[in-house]
Length: 103
Image (cartoon, rainbow, N blue to C red):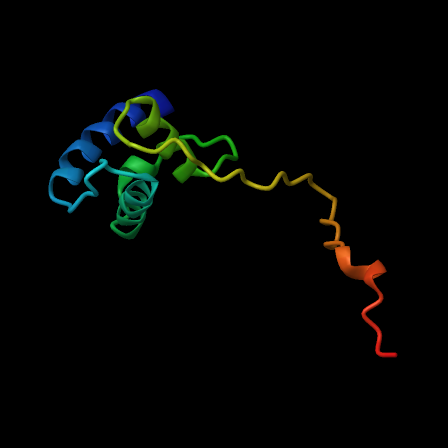
């Protein structure tokens, strides 16, 4: 299924799904979109059979819901960039130069 087809169907499914859910006074949030996505996954919904081109399908669906103004939040945590064949660098500790030794 193409993303354009899936987008329309997923927005329609969202509109039906959200009516049966308790929602915060400010409106549905990213947390609700994640619950929606997990339910689609758990039921094996054919709505998730769209081409993702290597992207996270939840992020795609979340962006569709934001773009269609179905969510009240606009915060999406950035996904770490993964470069094939490279290992992530270990985290550096800021406290190396603090001494920290026992005198």
